[in-house]
Image: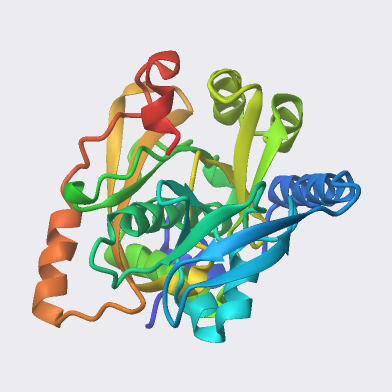
Length: 330
């Protein structure tokens, strides 16, 4: 791909960064949030204390079996390692006691039955929602890493996943009022999503106090505004996710790793005039993707791409947050 970077105008993407550098470069605030995530993750593990055993009854191929695991430490991913390597690679999500979706890397609390969900099962709707939500989260990571500092980028939120809408979404704020990304810029974002997939990074979940969440998102006024409402609906806790050094708020669950992401296109950016103000302008970024295990022809995928360019009708970021927190924080 040949691009004349010097002709790209403010606040366009850092295409020199997008092309020449890998995703892992992060801003100071992003690195700080990741550091706080690591510290809290370590603290919670150390506070487990005496290790207690739980029985996990695995139901599925190659055969049902009972595993003895460690309470508050072992995860469905650990269980999958006992069953077979391919189940670690292919499983997007776990289902506990036939009713509760559970992140693959989230510690198990009690004895339970466990099923491993993937994207080719006869009823993949639970895994599909987690995939759509994860795509929004990963788009936020790519956007955070790809804009110049002077662009004034703030991640706002991503709405509840709705596969029927035809697109996954992440809402952002920029300093410029009339940003209209070029085709090469959207393609560059798509490439960064694929790079994330190729790294096969774990997607980690952590429940933190509202105080710690406020510290994590100290530099983002929109996240700080959302945190009290999120905590009020979650027993004072805020659920955050991390991929690489990128941290964001989400109810989850999400798929276990970026390696499950296959074909992906960041297809559109829609300005949202309502709620914008001087120096802070809302945009809705949209895309479409497929799990890595699914393959479709170019013609069919082109139909999905075209559909994903239409403005997604999910709750807009400028609508009152107190009333729509469940819709705005997926």
